[in-house]
Image 1: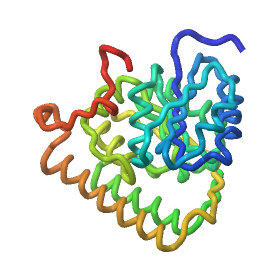
Image 2 (image 1 turned 45 degrees about the vertical axis):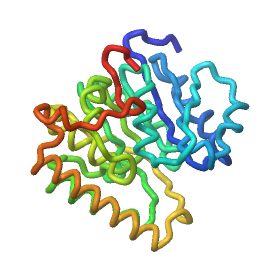
Image 3 (image 1 turned 120 degrees about the vertical axis):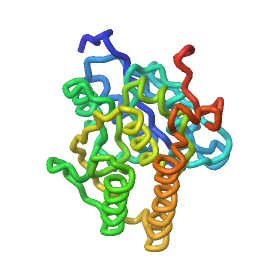
Length: 268
């Protein structure tokens, strides 16, 4: 398919202990992106090179559009995604979780919807009426809790903020990322709520096809995730509504991290 030069797409795949599946993941995503009308890059970010053998598997993958990056110690998914976003070249920047629980064909849909709706952000949503999902009760509770928090505390009119498939216009990330603090559980909530606060309100949902790995979530880990998400979400609410930390007038208080912040001038 001839590629459009109008926009360049970056697709980020955060990977943590994904050595068994990462090559298959990359080829599945590559097959999807080869069918879209834009040029693209695939960025795999390894969240802890010291504990993950994914890089040795990725060394066997020879794709010109593939970039593999990472750092020594595990810092969490939010950190990994932000680290890759700061190094992405795309006009549109997406991320999708490794493991392929979410069908990668959803990438082509969210890319097109970003343009159709002239959106700032498109989020893949388990709660979209057209979604096909299979996931455990604990995950449904986490998803419902995140929806209640996002709607009533953070004023985000999105039914599912936690699914691992999202796409952003570059200008959104350049504006929002330098203000963020969270690097793990509620990273998505902070990113969406601050974007909304700063006027990037055109946030829409897209359907996904998801088949969740039932064996990966124990009762104890499920409760821990719920608690940590709630704690982080309340912290975001406090900074957003009470301290107004994310507003431009508090720029001097933002914590600058050269590895995570996107710089408009350099485009990196």
